[in-house]
Image 1: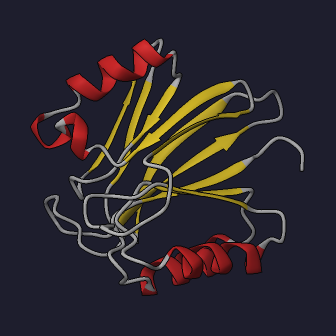
Image 2 (image 1 turned 180 degrees about the vertical axis):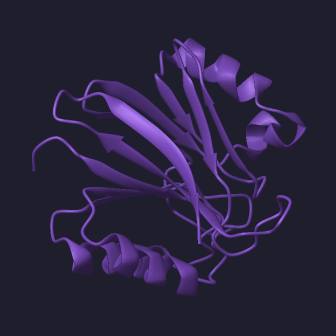
Length: 168
């Protein structure tokens, strides 16, 4: 597969996957899906649904604080184009108290992008050296208005990334 162009970022689905499946249908084929944790045993369903849309879709999933018996890697680091991406659920970095600690850790790791979940609230901050993104929750949103949310990372032809939070 070449450089990913369209990446779906989700979190905190908590086995309630109906919105995720509908979103895949709406968005069409993706290059990658990243789930920031709390899948509660539905890793296979999440992965298979994405791959059924696009055979070469990569799926990256980390466990959350409710994924008690998961064998998934606790955190992931990988490259998307020229971007060093770090994915963690975030609960061990006190994200419910704010993004400061996770941002510090991301910078220490040399990450360009940190993706996390746990709070069920969408958050996007683009700084010169770091993008900090929480897609919120597709199943149990907690922000004002309680609209299910997700994020998209898209790379243009030059490999420059853009990020946006979107709602169902």
